[in-house]
Structures are given as structure tokens and as C-alpha cells.
Length: 163
Image 1 (cartoon, rainbow, N blue to C red):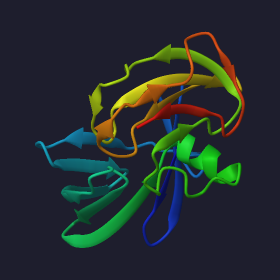
Image 2 (cartoon, one colour):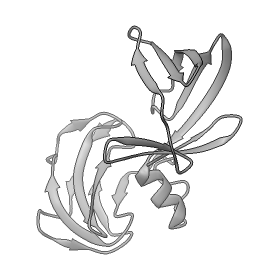
Image 3 (tube, rainbow, N blue to C red):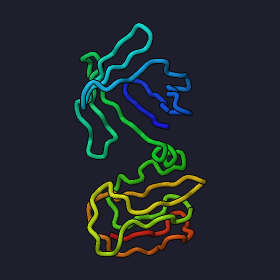
Image 4 (cartoon, rainbow, N blue to C red):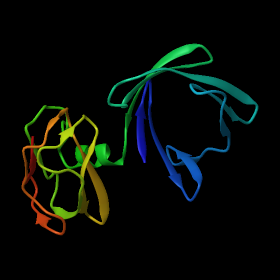
């Protein structure tokens, strides 16, 4: 599920190949026109959507629909879950420690001490509440220490990686 906020707020999700917008089935089509444009049609209405720019963290998009500009802010399932759990600013503040956002099980560790990482690189996978959560680097840096290992259970706010 995605939450998109522009002038209005929309909940967008795909269930069994069907797109739902605010819980209602979208009966139109979205077809790529080129690398930055789409043709959206529903019934007798046709819209030309173009992506003008994308923020570095890919959460804010400047788009135009039929040449009318919009700014869209996008939150994915993990962002929505973090906000629901009272962790609205997760990943916003530069930190030297990567902490567990919730209790869970370490399924995979994708980095080693001494390795250089860039913002957005996958550091590890944490299974929590029957979901696999990819924990990514919040900023560029070098891994100083990994305090966990694959198969280990962790508590909320436990330090997982230092960099």
C-alpha cells in the first residue's frame, strides 16, 4: 500500500493484480508513453502525466497532469507502519547507529565492518510481525561495527550496526 499526498490524500494498493484507490477499484489503464510520461485513461477521460523531478530519497515527486503541476509526497507500507507505531521521523535524522525500529528476527546481514555504504544501500533484513523489512543506510558512511548476526532476535531500539 502507498499513501500519496498532493492536494488530496490517496491510499493506493494492488490486491491480486487490481489497483484500488481509496478502497475503490481503478477501472482505467496506465500506459508508459516514454521514460518520464504516462497516459492514464478511465472511461472517457484521458490524462497525460509527466514526471518533472524526483527527490533524492524518492519520496517527493513533481509531476504535471495535462500540464497542471502537482507535488506528490509518497509513503510506502514501511513508512505508514512506522508512523502508526509513533516513529514518524524514522530515517530523517543522521545517526551513527542503526537501531531496530521494532522487535524481530535478523534474516540477512548484507554488509561487513569496514565496508563503505551509500544512502539507500540495503544493510539488513529484519522480520517483524510476519513481514520482511529492509533496513537501508540513512546516509553515506563506513560500517564501523555490526553488533548482530543472522538468526538473532533483537529488541526495539537495539543497536544493530554502527557507522
